[in-house]
Length: 401
Image (cartoon, rainbow, N blue to C red; front, side):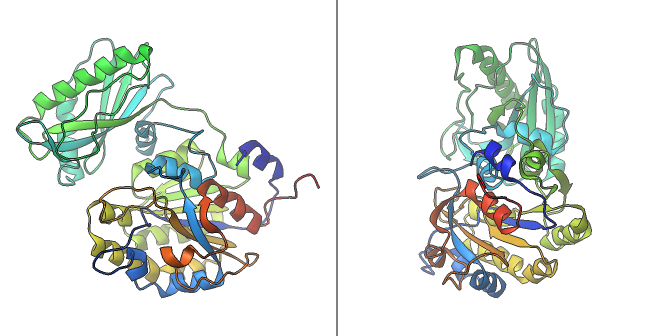
């Protein structure tokens, strides 16, 4: 989608769009059940929505590409993720309201566990709690690096933020996260010649962190990824005409929304609390992004049954969303997180869209296999979802009328 073209087509309308994102919703068939988590789940309300609306599978980034959460969400908001790229560290910084300066370099960190040989055995430190995170971040603040200011802040759970502030820094530094167990953390490599100093500073930080945390198993090491610098992108409201609000429990998603100019509302992780917050602000905005994190967590933990249960929990609360009477209601995931794979994957993601103006198709069950037959198609580019929603909301005029 050409955002500049979209901006010229936007028109005012008294309509509301609700986008419900169940993080990591997509899956692959379970060997035990022969179906995906979404297909095994009892979802009468989502099935009813699928029967009334229009369905398909969306492709978050591109064929065969497993997307990160930031890229996948950018696509859902209409921003081509291969054009608008940003390090995860920037999103986490904005999500916790860190005062990120234009020249700062931000990295997302995980406390993690390594064995006696230095190999990664748990990339999330047994999903340590936030209070333990704060204590370890306090210790990491002892680290001093030559020629730069260093900031270490708790994000949530096992996640923390590292920010470097100084002259001649570059965001072109590779991750230290090997993305698989049994391997040692990677050395931070410069992707361009002018990033060599920054890579050296990051390596120095990791080495000092390893010494400080050596007695702290299962949080005896750190891994870093998503090195980035604050970008300047088209504002979501100016592009779409929508007054937008984001409701999420995890800072990264709020950080991305903030970067695009959305109002952010941090909630707890329980769906009831999130919907209550949505109900409270319903009259204040035109576009609502409601993020549910727990399907992704269950998928990454390899817990198929828990993922089924989370989906069913969301389904039971769908009547509260439909009672708000959005003019356009979209339910989807940002990407697939198959429990069998314990990670994000490249598989297309189910999506259903309902409005009074949408055509119906033959889909009557909201699941991967059924949605392949939907009228939105089996490989809808995720960045096309927002323009389709705007059209259904009566917010796009004709081209070259």
